[in-house]
Length: 71
Image 1 (spheres, rainbow, N blue to C red):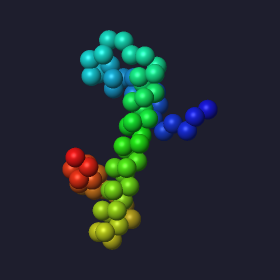
Image 2: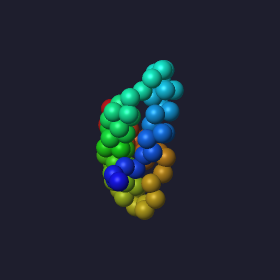
Image 3: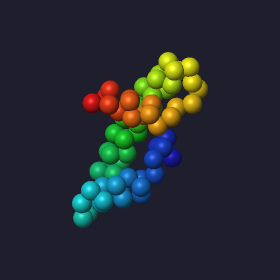
Image 4: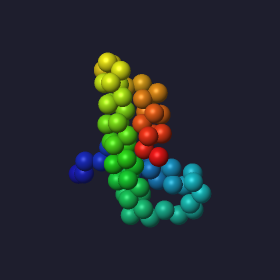
């Protein structure tokens, strides 16, 4: 058992929705790892924004702001 957060089937659907006809399991696992790593970084930055605003709750604006800053 691994410590994956995202289900592989959902990531497979994302790749197929992007236009891929066939998707290898290796590709799904690779994208899953990338999405989880970037999602954690984004969430950490959003948590900092919430903390700076004296909030314990991360809101959508924090996520969007963190995404803008990551670009």
